[in-house]
Structure formats: C-alpha cells, structure tokens
Image (cartoon, rainbow, N blue to C red; front, side, top):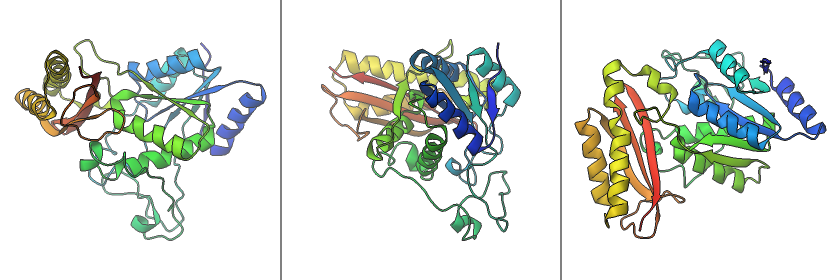
Length: 307
C-alpha cells in the first residue's frame, strides 16, 4: 500500500498535476473537508475507474461557515484520512493550511475558532476580497438558513480547480444543491472540468453518510433515521398516487418532527432548476430536507420521476 504524496503548498500541488498531464495521464479530483467515510471512498473509487490519477483534498473551508456554526468542532482525523486514501489508491492529497490571503494586520480568527476571511470582515484592505457566486441556483433550500454558504463553496472549489487542474471532479449527491451549483458554475465559466454527481451512500439503517454523523449523540443518532424513512415513504406515495407537493412536504416534515428532529426545511422542487413545484405529474422531482438533531444539522434528499 503506497502512501499518497501530501502537498501543503499550492505551487507543489500544481506542479504534481502538471507533471501527470505531461505524462498523458488524466486526473480525477475528490474535494473533501476530511473525516472521511465510505461515501467519500465511493467517490475515490469512481475517480479511479474513470481517471488515471486520483487527487483528493482535505480542507475545512472557513468561508462556508458563519460565525455561529460548527467550524471549530467539525470532526478532524488527518492520520486516519490519509490511511483510508492510501488504501483506496489515491495518488496525492492536497492539505493546505489556508487558501485565503491574510495580511499581517488581519486578526485571523473568531471566538468560535473559525477564521476571519475577507477584507470587509477583517477590516483589512489587503485581505482576500474576490468571490465566486452562482446567482439563481444558490437561492432557496440550504441558502435560506445559510445565505453565506454557496459563495464560500463556489470560491473554494474554483480555487481548488485552478490549483489541482483536474479533468473530472466527483461530488456526492447528498449535497444535491451544491452539486447543481458547481455544475452550473463550471458550465458558465467554461472550466475544463467534468463534474460528476455520485449516488448517496447510506448506513445500514438508511441514514445518509456524513462526517457530521459523528457529532450526534447516541440518542440523536437513533432518531435521525427518521429523515431517510420519511423521504422513502414520500417518494413511494408520490409514485403510487398523484400526490401534490404540499402534501408531500407536510408528510415529510411531520414524520421528522415526530421522530425527534427540528426541521430546517422540507422542499419539493424540480431536480434541475431547483424551483419549487406544485404539480408533480411527469416531472423529475427532488424532495430535499435539512433538519437538526440536537445541535447537528443533517441534510438528505430523494429524486424521482413522477408518473
């Protein structure tokens, strides 16, 4: 089992990728925030099947967290992550300390452990001030309660694509809106990267795999399976009967609340445009959920073609 090469500097990571290209090899890229699980490994496996060389990144991106979110307690396991990536045949891992310029006068951090990034917040005209956003698809769903999120995601993914220079990048569809947003960003900015969305990987009881699952208490871990169960029942209901969106929303929200969760949102939308639907007949439908169990926010979804 060969250990992957680990790069912490942008120049070294880019040099590795360009050497692979000179040798005629294609590069598959799996961006992560670490604390890897079988869902991440399925992305690495898909990248290995489609590309000659696989590069992963481990970087907890501060710009997709707000002041009061879980940046400071987000789970970390660097040594175990590298072991898993080695076993999966990953050739290189990019693990930068930071991807945002901080001048000497920047304060560097908040009380919750997250970083201060950006000229406006840092009160520093020399700090990072360039952002990437996708206007329409970044609205609604997760953006309702996390309006900062997709600007941070789009910016860091753009930077990672410029550094790693992959032929293809692999994303899990648990983060469905994120996948669609990145897909649109790549199209609109003519980036030479093929964006591949991969199926959700689930635990034996149906819970969608997520690094945040490790933050659940034992009781909340048991309760959290109500999300996938509610989504499965709603899909079966919609396929078997001519259910409308409002009925499905109410059904899923009630099931999650009864199971002990606090609903952030339940939305029934078009699977490509992410626009809310009322009538489902003949449409490709996405039912998307975010819910809290204790302080841990989980997301999940199902998509299907309505009869």
